Length: 111
Length: 112
Image (tube, rainbow over all chains, first blue to last red; front, side, top):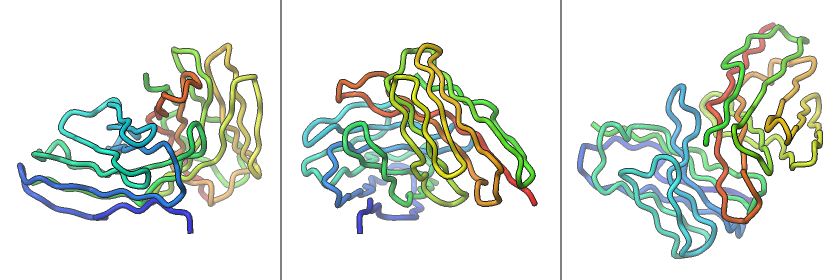
């Protein structure tokens, strides 16, 4: 089944404790992206990747890191999480310019 | 640059029609439309490419006016299942290196 898989789906952590949210897709998509969703602000892009080893900042990249060492994986790293990073995170992938397939979302709470 | 959606929210009775607009201050190459139901991930509805095309998806259709830099989503004879938040996403050009930027969404509620 074609899908985008994110883990963990839910996480409560404390300020400063490094965490990684994994994202994996099985559709051989070149394009992958991370979005955060907050009430009233829509889907804001954090980072995106056009292909392996090619990543670029979106609109809200501060406090996040990404890497794209393999085509299927695009992890999101929070080196030192802060409460303002409490949010719902979505990973998505597509062929370039095509339909975006979203993961189920990861709800992160930083205390 | 984030596209602007209007209205922010709309309430309809079953069977009524609605229009959701998406506009940009920059020239656009394509517009995507997605629907997100509460507690779920956004789901793709359609893509429109420049050229003034119009597309349909069941009783949901859309138009794209590249000169006006705007797109509209038309929901006809709305059903309860149409409830959710609708997002437009825009691409500024087809260089292969542009991300999709989403608007803030329009919350649609269909009531019996």
